[in-house]
Every structure is written in C-alpha cells, then in structure tokens.
Length: 181
Length: 179
Image (cartoon, rainbow over all chains, first blue to last red; front, side):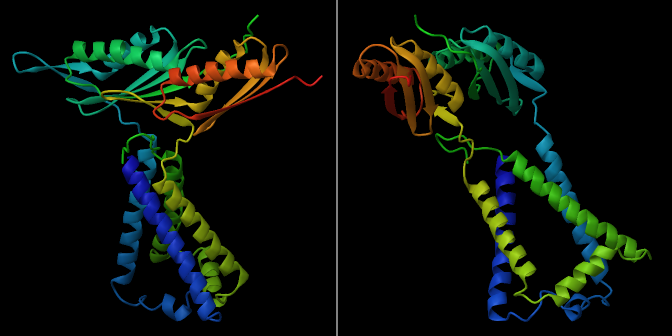
C-alpha cells in the first residue's frame, strides 16, 4: 500500500507538474494561442470509435480511483495465524486472539499505560505493529527491551512462530510537572 | 522502501484526497458524457469550460495562474512521494526483528521529568528536535554553572536511556527566573 500510494502520488504529481510547465512554456513561445480550439475538440467526434473509447477509458480510470480511495480506508488485518505442529500439520490460531493476548501482555509491562497491537502480513509469517502509550515514569529503551524479551518472545514461542517481526511506536501521555523538593 | 532507520509514512491522507478528487472529476465527466450520449442536454459547465479553453489565450492571467498552481501542487505531490515523512517519530535502535520509534513529544516528556529532578531547577522546557535536544531551564537557587553541569549530565544520561538509533546533540541554557 505504501509503495502503491507513493508511486501513484509521484506519477500524478509529475504529470501535473509537466502539464503546468508545458502550458507556461507554450505561453511564452506563442502567447496568443489557446489550449484547446473548437476544431481540436471536435476532431475525432465523428469517428465511430471515439465516444465508446472515451467512455470506456473514463470508466476504467474512475474505477481505479474508486479502488484507490477505498484502499485507504481498509486496514489489512490477519484473520488467522498458522501454527505449525510437530506432525507436519498446522493449527489455526485466531489473529484476534493473538492480538488480544499480546496487548494484555504488553499492558502488564511496567512503564506501559496502554497498548494496541495489530497483526498483518501472511498467515504463516505474521508481522505485528505495536503502539505503546508510555507511563510518566517509563524509561523508553528499557520498556522496549522488555517488550522484545518478554511479550514478543513469549508470543513467538507459544504460537510456534520462527520469528515475529514487529514495528513498535512509543507515544507519551501528557502529564503535569512533578518538582524535586 | 523500508529503508534502514527512518520510518516511511504510508501517505494515506494525501493518497485518499487525490483519489477522491480524481474520482469526482472523472465521475462528473463520465456522468455528463453518458447522459449526453443517451440524448439528454449537456450540462452548462462543460459548454462553459470548452468556451474558456477555446477563447482564453495562453498568457491570460487565469491560464497562467492555473498552470503555476498545477506546477506547485505537482511538485508537492512528488515531494510527498519521495520523502519519508513521520518526522515526529525518532527511530530507536531495536534488535532482531523489532523496529521501534518514539514520538519526539514523548521523548521530550521523559527528558523534562528527569530535568525537573535536578536540584535548583524551577522550570524547564525540553524541545526534542530531529537532530538536537534543546533544554531551557530556570534555576532559582545554586550556582547557574553547577545547575547547567548537572542538567547536562542528567540529560545526556536521559538521552542514552531513550535508546535512539542516532544520538541527538544537546544544548542546555540556564537562567535565573525573571522577577
């Protein structure tokens, strides 16, 4: 999603820049011309294929734009995680259950006020994104280390995952000043 | 894309807005074209737009203005596409499969709490920039240089404990409170 968004933004941005630049340059060279004369506009109108092609192109582009807009609203969520078993089969673990467990575990760490966990990626190779809201007394690096060594490691072993890559964001809660006396 | 260090934003909001604008414009054209093809009259704005395009010369103020704004908007979109964004998130040094970042404001709160514990400090503002941490403190007792030295040590320690991937610089200013 990130790559698609950036690619499309870049391409469309470059196209807009190009359109603006071409118009400005053309205006310098021949200030009296216009952008689209009537003759240009109706040039293809009488061809049999013109209107179907225009309407088809616009429809496809509109559908793509609709898809792009909707894709921004959707958060890809992992419905279940595949837990490999010893006999070569696997069991399904509900993604939501793992998220809840991770979250409860993270919130029990000292220094963490709230946590949010979201699983994405593939069923056999899930990834976690974790948001932690820190306590006023938290030491960020120590809290992060505890999250790695306790919460994530535990989840990894209990779900039998070879690894569980995680992206962690730490936020703070605004709080008043406590003064040394 | 997932470059080492910085976090890259998904650019959800600019992408969503662009998509909606596109969808609106395409939909409007499509609607009008189809209704015209099926024998309904053309909407007024299309006739007006065609007239404008065919009558305004290229050095007309409106044309130039719109071209310039297209240039600016396009440049902005390209900038959004190629820069990482998420400037308020400072990357932390994680290990293994963990990538972590801390909000600059949160880091500032942690450092402020530590700075307030230095004897003599009455008030302090800690601004965590992307490369530099600035602390401005008011000390109401003790020698200013001593307070400054203590603050420097405390904040260095605090910055170390933030566990950032790149250690930011530190500058400390201490003053007497204005009476």
